[in-house]
Image 1 (cartoon, rainbow, N blue to C red):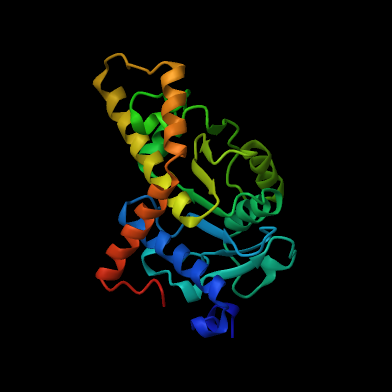
Image 2 (image 1 turned 135 degrees about the horizontal axis):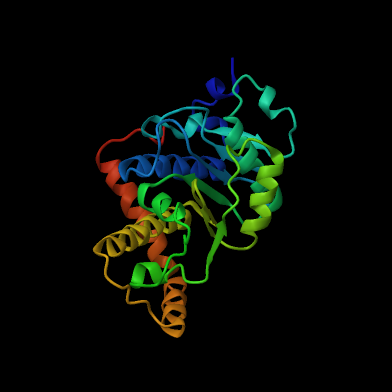
Length: 255
């Protein structure tokens, strides 16, 4: 029996880990609802130990609309035998998330996606998120940019490179690829992803007009970004409300 098959009830997990499982499972369902996901690719992970090296992650090639809390893999970033497990994760997921959790203990929840508008901006020669409105200003001077895409992220070396590039930031625009979000909680990671995609949608629409952008001054953009950071209760309320929507629909993510 695989480890996934063995993890079918909350009774075999301590309460803290089970709560994390439920939160992460809800995030997968919400990503699918907002059309941020791509087929059975993309991956989320969530640290369960203080050092961040043991973490939960989605099983290989499971569609986001079907992921349940009990099915999440429990992995150890330092376990070199992980890819030999009968329920081994996707190689690109392991190479990316395993190395990020090993190197960045502050990155408790890590989300990697290819959402349409953010990926479109990440594919431009200038992938910067220009502060043209309140949403885009949230990310002013707070985004790492990777312009050295070299193919699938399927090696430890690539994961280590991206970890170094991410550093202490929470957002990375992955050129020719997608986005990477690192946050302290699932709620914050979800909210960052939501607003990043909305910001990039606004920027795409503005570019489509062909008119000059009205870019904020550095001072106003920085002030706005700081105001976003000072309202963290809203991030948690946003995620809680969206979980309530899932619960009202009777979705089974918490099984």
